[in-house]
Image (cartoon, rainbow, N blue to C red):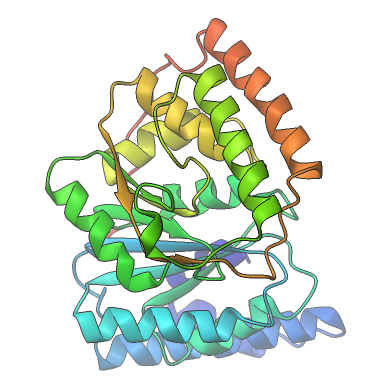
Length: 304
């Protein structure tokens, strides 16, 4: 049974799952699936917000070994959705975590019909996770945010407003208005970040102050265009999707957002910076080969 299609199970399939008696790790996995499916069916009987129609927006959260904060993150996101009255779904993309991230998401989703889990086929990288989530999202506006919520989720409304005003893509920026940084990075991280952004703007021809902020929103059509053409699976996917957007003549608005540095950030500017520089060369090579000029196909949503 595919972990990525929990919501498509029927009552008959749930009953079949309950009759199975696996052992070892499969018993744990089957138990998690059964609890999730039971809660999902119960929520649908009570009136899940997505029984009819589709969510207006989708919030994708890539996650790798996020057991220390994923529950708090989901609680904050769901509370915001409900208090602000957003018609939104939340998709957590588990990137092959070896901790309890997946189980925590499934347990949380039992009482939060807005939340669903997607599983990557192993640890594939942040770029792959974002692509997987956004291409399977059902909203008319789709966005991704980091699990640390360095940009508070309420700031998503600023991105949504930019899209309502005509942008195809709205990207959060830490540098358009520095006064909105409530907890700044250490000086060495600021230095390396600004150097990387300068190189990105020069090599890629991108005009943005901040390409790496993990807080971006897209119209459904723009997301399907950009992410079907994306090739970079690691940290360097941000410059690629913005480069593709430029090649496809999509309007990208840079939006200042409130942002606070999280000391638990895993990115290393020396190690990951080297990989991202190499990936920029790959992007330029892809452009020379015309790989970003190909056709894209609309992705149909499942029956509501």
